[in-house]
Image (cartoon, rainbow, N blue to C red; front, side, top):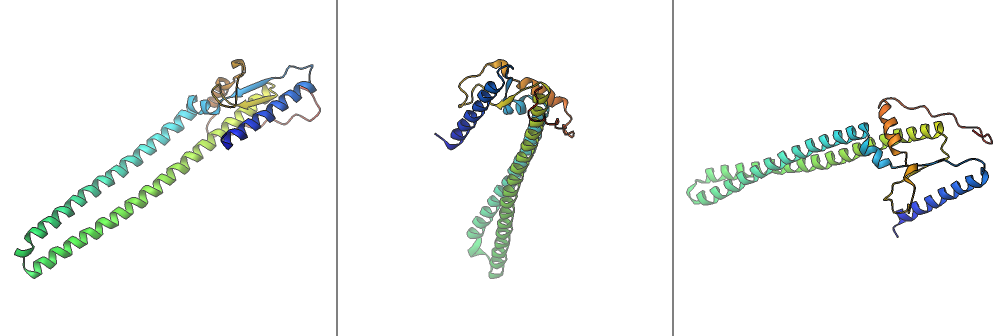
Length: 210
């Protein structure tokens, strides 16, 4: 089994042990457990879709610019090939001075093309890395905001435990869909301005019941 799935299985086992422990410690109170699909929140929320659209537009612009550079490279390579063919066919008819001039022109264009190719390769590598880093930053920022929303709702509505998962997650064999609070999280997440940080509710003193 892949290490990632092993870790998730261990994590779920530990969390379920906590749930069972809470159940034994507070048998007089019904335990409230929720499940949230974080990926679904990102896919379904207005803020998540907006971030995905921004990244898609950025990716499209990057691809278009790379495509234009590659087309320019192709044209210049064809020009060089044509120039070389013409030079070879006319070589014996040209004077020494004319041959030297054409040879120098060809070498100059070849050097320019090589510099352009090197610049294009660097641009592609740097832009791709920058895009990936922005994608990571956007996703991490959204997930941080979603977790704050989950924490807020968990505190406000008295959840003992909120788990991350969905009905297709390999390590989750079954859960009652009634405990899936993903739609609630999506709604609250979209109600929160992107530039506003939710205040974390004060922790309940240990030993006190709600």
